[in-house]
Image 1 (tube, rainbow over the protein chains, first blue to last red):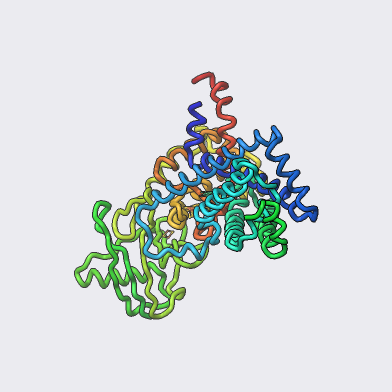
Image 2: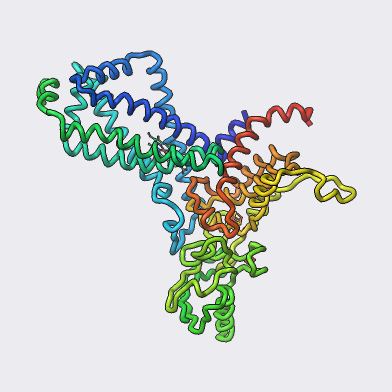
Length: 229
Length: 257
Ligand code: HEM
Ligand code: SF4
Ligand code: FES
């Protein structure tokens, strides 16, 4: 037990928790993306509604959901703790500090990109989980998505948040493997290649949806389905 | 060439420091950076002023004594050199250069540009050693080591303990230094006896000294005069994970001693 406490408190241990939760969140993103892409199927939302129904009723998914909430909490708490401790480690700042010359933007700003992802998360949950599970007579999932993305502001906010998620992952994906000790000269290149695919494709995949609904979807169908807003 | 220096002056650890400006008007581009500071200091002494204190010893990039943050970069803007290997030809006539000490909670300023790096010595004392048998000198090549392993260990052993990795890191983390030491010894057969204990103790000491957490920015690798690679940090993480998984077992086999 002593050893576990020491592990959790150590710098390396905290980062291992961050990397494991981070990769778990990455796997969630992938599943979520695949599910969301059913929105693009031209069937009036039948496939997406079925997916949404499955996700909110299946027992195994509900258990995983608890894991997901815990994963987010551990990741966020550890992230804030690490960030705070790292500020303490340099009490006197440099007068000139050219960190820009040696490190990528995404790596220097994980706390910024992470925090915006967090804000996004809250708004996102309020719209979709709030709008489907904690509302009387909820609309169909498809109708709710269509109506949310009929707002230009809301869609734009989504796209911006997803760009920042992309930057979070650009740093985070490779960093997680480094933290877990899985990067070496042999696989480093391969990991970077998978990393690029991941941090580019996942946010683009998600961003297609607000763009598609805002520009190409017939809004009146959606508002009608919602009973007119 | 004419160089304006904006130098951090601080009497001792207790006092608060400030920047002072000096103009070096007769600098040759062939001078090393430290020679330029020697000239500035000679002028200061002649004028009855306190010379700028900075660390140095070998002046050929092997001892790890020197270290100044020069224009916002640890050991200056060039790759793979220590401060003593930097030459004035890197700069242009009329440049203004800011000189600051390594900044980290674990490296208190002793005076001006000199910092106390004994935190790194304490990390070494915590675990950076190997057990050896006393007696006759062993044969040089008595223990076979594969070439690629020896090479990798040698790359880690190139670390001169200068602390530039800490100075460059946005988090004041000493991971590259500790990784170099852990990695070097974990790779070699001679380092196996303390392998598990070493990484646990060195990471513990590193944390206790107040160094920050690694956030995989890799600024350390970019500034390291010996180009120690961050793949050694991955190995340190791996060693740490491994040590935590196997340690219990070891305790038992030690018979509770
Ligand atoms: C879907 C959401 C998210 C995913 C997939 C994700 C993924 C990751 C990954 C893989 C890492 C790398 C861990 C490592 O360095 O080993 C990371 C780092 C980080 N994450 Fe997240 N993250 C997410 C959300 C958040 C949120 C909401 C925050 C809120 C504060 C956050 C804050 C951070 C910070 C500060 C770091 C850097 C830690 C450090 O200093 O090394 N992340 N993230
Ligand atoms: S790892 Fe490089 S920068 Fe860090 S102490 Fe060793 S030689 Fe200096
Ligand atoms: S003075 Fe020895 S490394 Fe610079």
